[in-house]
Length: 243
Image 1 (spheres, rainbow, N blue to C red):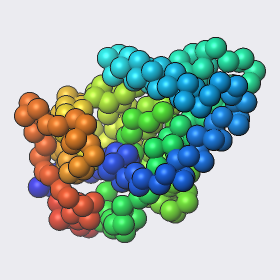
Image 2: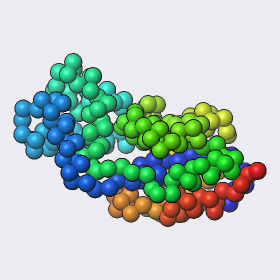
Image 3: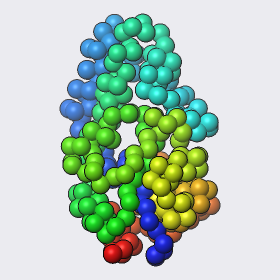
């Protein structure tokens, strides 16, 4: 336990929210994309093409640690062969549907109560998330009525930086007005989240065990978090009441 922590930043995907598989929901998202774009080729050919472009784009993002805006994502990387005037007005909608095709994203059951209690205990709270969407996280926060508990929300799609680049962590610390050594970060990626947090000089890194993440990116042993937790509510055992 580090009694000098003033601010706690949290990841969102697979940390505060998880993906629930829902074939009907996913299929509806795909169909909406086809309808919005008036796709003439078969759905299989269309999505095979997009998946190839998506993989190439994500590889580039991970190598450069730069995130594209929603508009650049679709007009430059995903749909460069579609008319600009058709794609530009719907880039935000396309991003949401592209994510929805993987399933429903829902908050963990203990998230809201834990956020409220950490805020009550006197910690400044913020979000640092790698995400391609500019609206999904703010919309979820508003829907679950937790927006006012967070002092800042740093999204890679808005600031063009990606974890583990320490710059995104330093930006968040500046936004919230707390030096890095007095900040903690909570995330699910055993490599990227730990590496970035420690490179930025944060005082603490807490890793939530998430099976889906560990399957895709197992720990290498090179980076070690300060704590490992299985539920968000366990943060209340790490961060005491500051009052």
